[in-house]
Image (cartoon, rainbow, N blue to C red):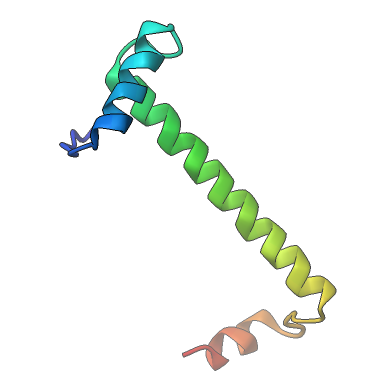
Length: 73
């Protein structure tokens, strides 16, 4: 596990401390881990939704995967 040191503006530090005080997480690091996990999930969901929209719009690749990969830059 890697340790990061990230400066936070006062309002985010207050938020993190509040989450710990409310028992949402055991400590500050856990609040940040939970926030990053949720952010990653949201990002993945957005990617899937975008892909689905592109498929509806007809922006899909069809054909032999090996040939398609060779066409990529």
